[in-house]
Length: 229
Ligand code: SF4
Image 1 (cartoon, protein in one colour):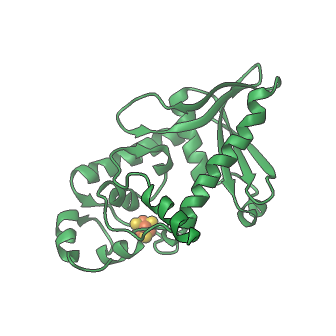
Image 2 (cartoon, protein in one colour):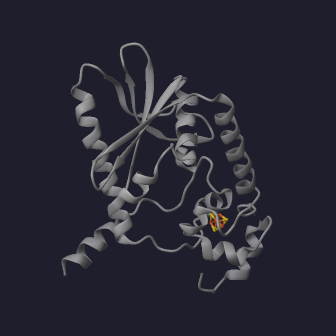
Image 3 (cartoon, helix red, strand yellow):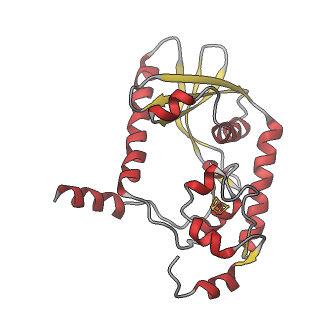
């Protein structure tokens, strides 16, 4: 009885599925998957336990921020900081901190033991997100802090700002925006379907039906109308 009620709570409270602007988390992601999110295309439903895991991740962030907010060695300049308004992208970093000399953007990521134990260097997609924060906040350095959700162990990586990497990410999002406005489904990833993003993609079935290359969204919608995707 309780399981159904709790699952329903999470499924009913999913955030708005239709996306209207880019988030920092879209940086470096498959343009086709981002396109489908903007168009609110049919997708594989998220399971309630995955939604609970996201919620759990928020609690882990609070747990990490608690000591930072009360320590002398590190000063939290601001927490949950929105990137300055501009046309292409929105996002909120966990915090901007200072060690008394320099400012750092802090991005906290939680993960299970299996992934945490294998982590020898920061994940490229996490560096991409951090680079966008560093670019928009004009802060020279950031910290990716990884938390093992099972054991609460920590790993941290200090990353220098790389303006070129940030600009190239912004340019790729601008390209996807052109396709969104022109109703053209972007091409799939070069290493589809073996790319890790394809393994977890909610649009995998839809993507298979669209096939390779750029595809007209309007014609594709007509083709799949009434089909189960
Ligand atoms: S299945 Fe792979 S290529 Fe297709 S939309 Fe998803 S991530 Fe992109």
